[in-house]
Structure formats: structure tokens, C-alpha cells
Amino acid sequence: MRSYFLTLSAVLFLGLVAGCATTPSSSVKSPKASPTETGKGDGHHENPVTKSKEVLLPEGEYRLEIESTPNDAMVVVNGIPVGRTPRTIEIAGTKHGFFRDQVSVKVRFISTDAAHQSQTIEEMLTPLDRIPATVKFTPAGATRVARKTS
Image 1 (spheres, rainbow, N blue to C red):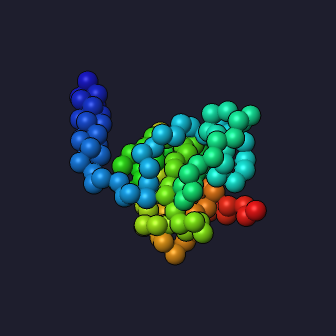
Image 2: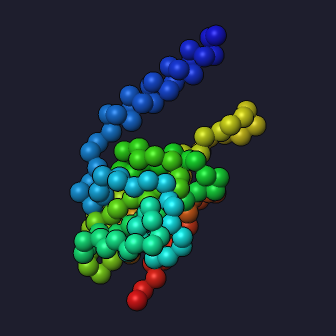
Image 3: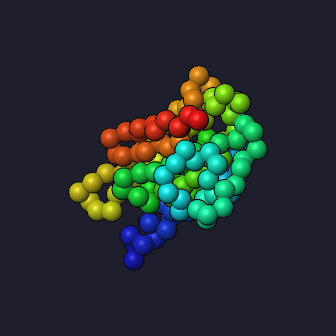
């Protein structure tokens, strides 16, 4: 019973801390995204729900796929929890495909047993970086997958 209350207290504390985070940068749109349901592609002109219809984003907006191995890791963008992997978010960028502002993407792998530790991996994306199609996270680190050019 005591461990139940400790777990509940920890969850409530983390929720409170997450709610006190700063507001997201203007370069990251509110996560309208749902878990990724698309096939592979450049992610810029794909609809996250249906593969048959192509939805164009306004100029200067890009889709960024966030994946992890193992799946179901918690995703935090600029201090705001946005869901679990796989996740698609919309990012504002320049017309040349660079970030407008610095963007922090953190993925938290939660331990499921005492033999492993929970880990947080952070990837900092700056205005000097091109917006990748995908950022893949593992407990060892993050890898960016470049966007296909036309």
C-alpha cells in the first residue's frame, strides 16, 4: 500500500512539474499530431492519418517525426510534454528548411524493472541545422534522418 502512495505521489509531482514548464517557442506548433500512421517519406507533405490524401502544409512549416527504440517513450519539446513515441510534430522553419529558433527534444525511456534505469536523451536543434524528416532516439543517443530534397 505504501509503494502505491509513493508511486501516485511521484506521478502527481511529475505532472505538476510538467505543468509549470515554460511556454513553447513560436517555432513549434501546438502538437496537433497523433501517433505516426504514415509510411516513410519526407514527412513534409504527408497526412498523418490517411495515406491516400496529400495535405500541404503552409510554406515554412514542416513535419518532424520523433521515433524511439523501444517505442512508447515520453516526448518533451521545449519543456512541454507532447505524448509518446512515435509522434509527429509540426515545426516552423525558414523557406530553405532551417529551424527558426532553437528546439529542444527530449525523450524519456521509463524503466520497467529494477534491472534497468530510466534515461532521458536530449537532442538540441538550432537555427544552424536543417529540419530533419525524423529524429530516432535510443537509450544510447539520437540520430537525425535527413529530409529528401526534390
